[in-house]
Amino acid sequence: MNLNVVVFPGQGSQCEGMGHALFQAYPHIVANANAILGFDIQNICSTNGDNALNKTIYTQPAMYLVNYLSYQNYLKENPVPDYVMGHSLGEFNALCAAGVFDFETGLRIVKKRAELMYSVTETGMAAIIGATHEEVEEYLNAHFPTIDIANINTPSQIVISGSLNDLEKAADFFEEECLTYVPLKVSGAFHSRFMTPLKEEFAKVVAAQTFNAPEIPVIANFTSGFYPDNKQGICDNIVNQLDGSIRWVQSVELLLEKGECTFTEVGSGEVLSNMIKKIQPVNCGRN
Image 1 (tube, one colour):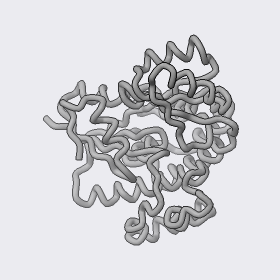
Image 2 (tube, helix red, strand yellow):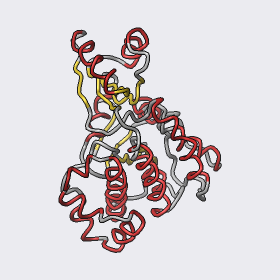
Image 3 (tube, helix red, strand yellow):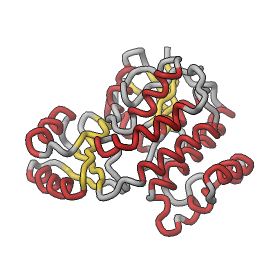
Image 4 (spheres, one colour):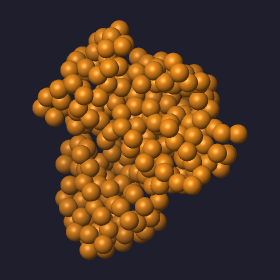
């Protein structure tokens, strides 16, 4: 049996002009989003004025909206998937697709998440290419204990988070180890200890929402296991993702253990599709 899996991209997949046709097709949803956000998300995506799309406070709501509209289009021609999952911000689209909350609730949560994450300054992220998760962890423990592993994207692409000063030093170190070091265009050290002080305020916002049991199984970035059907478990996964590593490799592997999978990326770009090919290129398909 072939399992159909829809995956939703997160921050980093944004691009100027994304969602143009979708905004024209779903004007009422866009208007609703603008009312909740207090700014014109369509204009930001269309013009990217002042490089707004690379500012977390705008990027995350924009990605959430484009992913959501893309999924509405997907459902017009495809059956409901067997599983859904998302990378970081994309996980909120997976939860929405699974009926855990409606579009508006998800957008309000994402809006608050973006505001909080944008408030952390003088920090950043970088991708290390060419080393395993275990190797990068060993390097960090020995030389850069204040830098955390943020994303385990592929078996040989690991994202780290830390202060800009520490990341600058780490760049020289990893290049000396003949590894590729790529700074990421993000505003802060996401999925690291630098996000921990934000969790209490974020948890209050999340706990105030109404959640339903998932109608489609959703894999949590934080645990690389399935979301539970109780509110406390749902809240814990959403909040802990803030400073926990994104375990993308382990999440994909969990599904591959269940059989042959076809992964369809719904949203902007093909970042996740390319990652999945590198996790198990022989056994997993993609659309």
